[in-house]
Image (cartoon, rainbow, N blue to C red; front, side, top):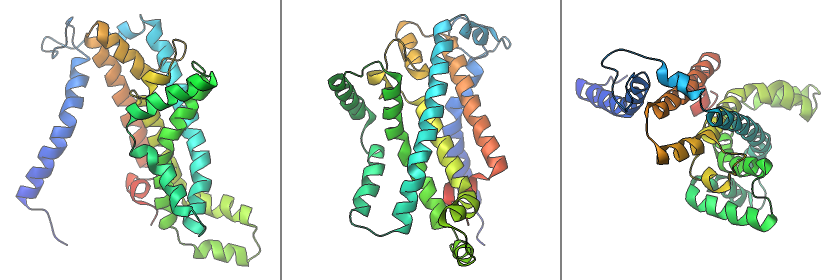
Length: 264
């Protein structure tokens, strides 16, 4: 097996450092005691984390984003799993077109999607309805679930399913007792990616939210247009911590290599 040389290791270190540096800086700035965005050279403070709870609108927006992410990710899994099974297991007219349709939100700019959804909801008279906000997020995040489900199905040993069918198990039993547990890492990873993308979605959400359904990223954007202080860094640090914790838990349970590459 070839090993990376010192030049390759240095290059990888620089790339990882370049990616992580902004996140580390944001997390450090969140602990500053100053009134401006600055490094906490004079000591650490939880002042700006406490300030978040002095703004009830941020708490409500966090609850909206949390509920939106949970519903969107769960509904996306309910759509992507049967769609992935159909695309992977069966050959039928229009299969490639359906696959492309499911993946199309990945290549369409979210600004375009936001304007399109805004126009559609206005025609339907559904502007400001939380359920339509969920529907728009489901459309955007379903491709992430579908890709990981397809990767898990592609690496699945189907001889186990064939053996169960030969022994008299029904297709439903085979799916619930064999297929679903084997592709669970892909499903879980897709759910997590869908939740993260829904929770962090800003560009499209600006167009489809209402004053009653403002999400946390939209609230942060609105606040940043009026004032930029370390509270924004504190909120960002909490979001980074939540995402990192979810990834660590998922890695401990399933392993990120199985989730992102597919079951082997």
